[in-house]
Image 1: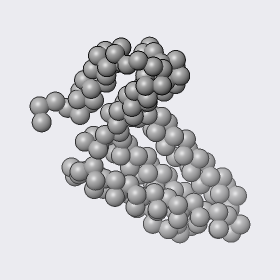
Image 2: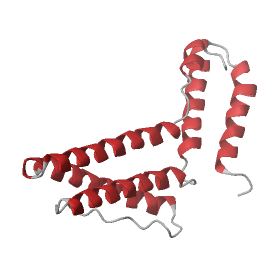
Image 3: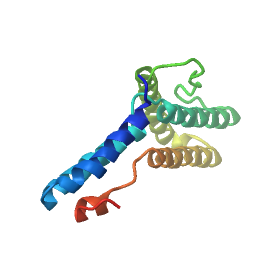
Length: 162
């Protein structure tokens, strides 16, 4: 492949904006075109050919697992599997997504465990676990937003390219 995935999507969206949109008659058609362009921009940000998004999610999961293990070691608690994920080897996006999904399932079990054992752990331990989980969730949302294409609501509703 001669062009990168993002460059390919940029070329398609530029063509659609510059060549197709001006020729469309009717607000409905232009609105549909801008909706399609928005979807293409989403694909550009999260394309399977780029593994950066998934690697960032796995790095966040590793930070959480490390924090949880440190907290549990300090208070002699036994969490469900909080071992770090090895992502040092080059992986395909498909493999990384499987690893990410497995990590998400582990995080769900960790959250359930923390809530189920809250009454049996020191208050300070619960506060630290709760803080680590909330920090993870905040960083996960920030990562999602970083890789989400900017909204095209104005273009779709007004049928213009900004």
